[in-house]
Image (cartoon, rainbow, N blue to C red):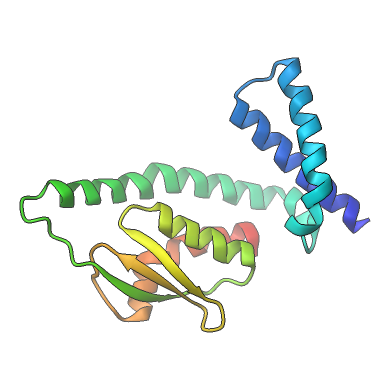
Length: 169
């Protein structure tokens, strides 16, 4: 039963992503999406969804994912882009680059990866390593404002963890 639910969850996610990415609901695209999603789900469902496949169908998790998506792309990204643009255009280019340790407080591999990707996709920060044993990210920061790990957590990853924990953990 768990394997069937994993397959269905993977299939549905792949199909929805395919339709959104293709931006078309023509019969040909729907058929192609169905065929592609079935094939990929058959080979990858047990690798992608390892525990509790019913989590994928939880409406509250989807609501948090959508809220995070809008918050990230409408508030966090533009703010960080503007900060980097100001630094680039400033005559003195006020940067203070460095690598800082940022502890994380999430459990699942998906959440750890999603937070790391969010940090990396945000202009001005790049995750260069993940220490799973020590539960730390090593982040290259364009303008190091603090080196204390707790302060770095507050400034860099706390917001991402807040939303993504509700989606994945």
